[in-house]
Every structure is written in C-alpha cells, then in structure tokens.
Amino acid sequence: MTLNDWIGTILTVVVFFLMIWAYFYALRPKNRDELESRRHIPFDEDEQ
Image 1 (cartoon, rainbow, N blue to C red):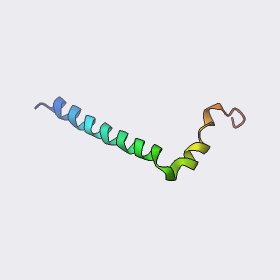
Image 2 (cartoon, helix red, strand yellow; image 1 turned 180 degrees about the horizontal axis):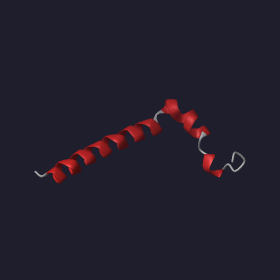
Image 3 (cartoon, one colour; image 1 turned 135 degrees about the vertical axis):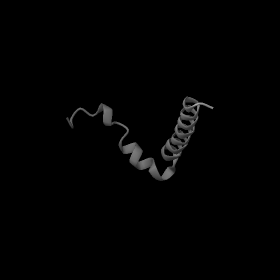
C-alpha cells in the first residue's frame, strides 16, 4: 500500500469513530436539556 492508501484508510476510520461519538452525544438522554436549549440559537436575533 502506498502512503495515500494509508492516509485514506486512517482518515476513514477516524471520521467513522467521530460520527459514532457525535451520534452517541446527540442521542444520549443526559444531554437532551443542553441540546434543546441550544436548538433555537440560529434563529435568535436579539443576542447580536
């Protein structure tokens, strides 16, 4: 395998585990209140 193959393989594995972590973080019941409070941040114009 060439260096590009190794870089692609490692990058794919890293992104895969980051996605698993992101789904786990977003769907964990413990984080629900925190994420719900941040839900409307893009639509709040008063805090600029």
